[in-house]
Image 1: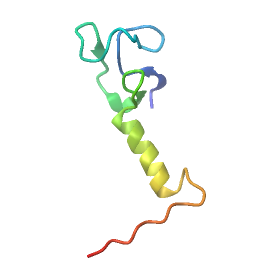
Image 2: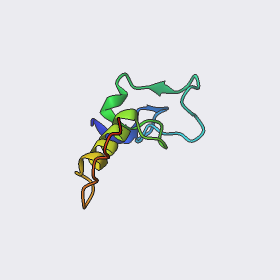
Image 3: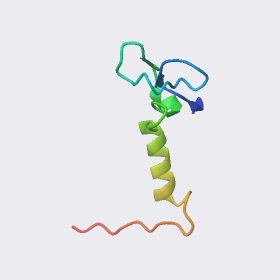
Length: 74
């Protein structure tokens, strides 16, 4: 990740976050590559951040003991 604290979608400041200017408004800009950011809008994480967390949980990297993979019913 390029930035853990700075939001991808925001309107300036050190964290690119303004609670009075939400993503989608005319004064708010989004970064070109959200996958390089942990934070989407100052509140929510990016898809890449959620993917990294989920993969860490499912692979056992972030869990002790590791989660067991469910059996697939066919």
